[in-house]
Image (cartoon, rainbow, N blue to C red; front, side):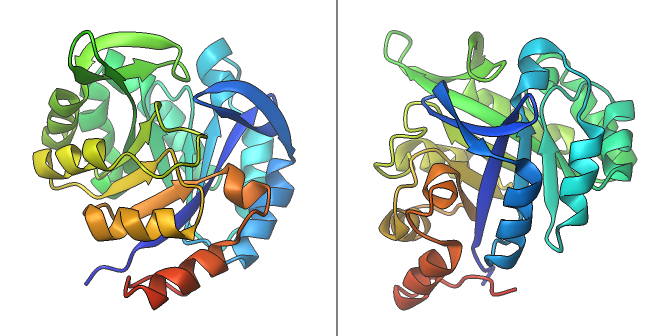
Length: 254
């Protein structure tokens, strides 16, 4: 049995970690390097670092902050935000990233997925999907630019295409559930599990340890990601893992 992963996420804007609700109302959380060092000792399985200011505003990659963050870690680091070419990916891998997360650029230019997976290996290429349910169109659709711009691309069509192009993993954020802390979007995640055979990191809605247990018991995702509950120390990754183990969910202990 593949053991489940618990992954904290740093949403970084202008060099500071921020967090909002449903991608709005961002508040300052702290320094990404300090938070990375904290999570490195707190039993996190990986760390995701999303530079949301770069996607929105086209900022230069924060290579000094990324490199310093990577230097604090003994766990895998995934970097995302505004990556638009294999050259960007190469630079990030050289500055400490183990994987990269592509979203807007992949939707704009799907061939980048195949080019990147062929060049760096599929294990390095994670596709982030910001998914929102649209009642009028009776389906989930992909959003870009930090959840600000809708597309006409259906989520289930997109994840199938992503798998065919060679991506190694999906990071799926339910925009409807993001920051609400009422549990993960099981319906969306089950549909994605049915559509593809890729490992899925579930994001959006994790508010307590029970939500993670429900996630792993009711869907086939490989990891659960959360931000504010860990940033605000409402619980710890170790406490979540202990609870999961009590509920019979196999987790990693690094």
